[in-house]
Length: 142
Image (cartoon, rainbow, N blue to C red; front, side, top):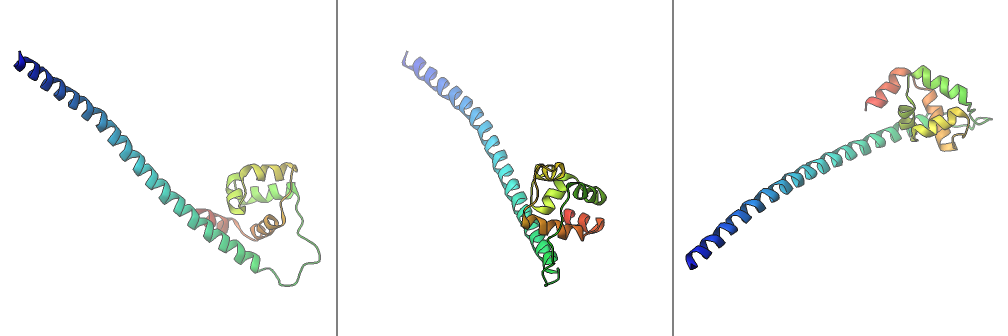
């Protein structure tokens, strides 16, 4: 009788270890996948931060090229003019927003006349007005 109980106990232990191994294997695979996803997201975030840095340098460089004397009037902004310039450059609202450091929804609000750009954004818009299609495409590809 003792032999039967020990055999039964050993069999139960073996089956439970097998079940546990199958369950932990699924968890290990999921954990490994999550770690690789996190690593790729970190690489993407780093790449985007570098791209933002380059764009900020370019915008500040373009803003620095403006004449040192203050213009008599501030730059004008019209929703219709901004929309037509964006169309001429072939930019989507999202692409224009990334160049100007705002969201696509902000671009739509400007074009609808619901809001107007702040001074910092106006400087970026003025710098964008000086760029051509190829220069804008190069900026977006970086």
